[in-house]
Amino acid sequence: MDSGQLDIYLGKIRSKDDLTYQHCGKSAEYALRLGEVLNLSSQELIQLRTAAMLHDLGKIRVPDEILLKPAALTEEEFSLIRCHPAWGAEMIEQEENPQYQDVADIIRHHHERYDGLGYPQGLASAQIPFLAQIVALADAYDAMTSDRPYRAALPHNRVQEILVEERGRQFQPELVDRFLELICA
Image 1 (cartoon, rainbow, N blue to C red):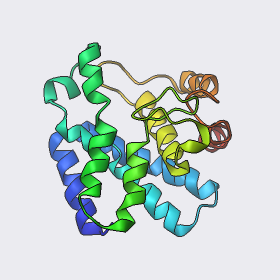
Image 2 (image 1 turned 180 degrees about the vertical axis):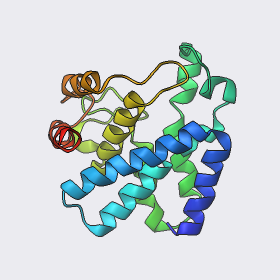
Image 3 (image 1 turned 135 degrees about the vertical axis):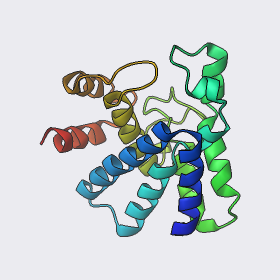
């Protein structure tokens, strides 16, 4: 994706919600650090960075009263939030450029779970694009370690415990191991 188009999308995210914009940037930093440790190719690192920067693009379609709600979401509200990966992927696919398809797939699948209980398609383990698995881990880590409208950031030791608990459930086991090495170093 060219930098001009990326900037346009990032501008849309920032104008909708600065917290989401900051979260996307930090998620991209974590994803890239992990990608470098995993010796991904330069092309994979570009796709990973772009997808991580735009993974929450679909949230621009979520009403502010839901996106910024300082309390727990209702089931109906959460159902709407669960649409954001598909919405973001659809926006990228409208670019009608084949090179953007991989980025759209990463965005679409960043809430899939290793155990198959994620969304939007309930993919499991190797069915989930590898780069989407990296974005999922980086996304979750930043979400847990940052203040949110509905809760304060979790302590780092608690986040580490959660990552270990979710190893093989929400996240690919080897990615968790490598990520913990990275953040605990």
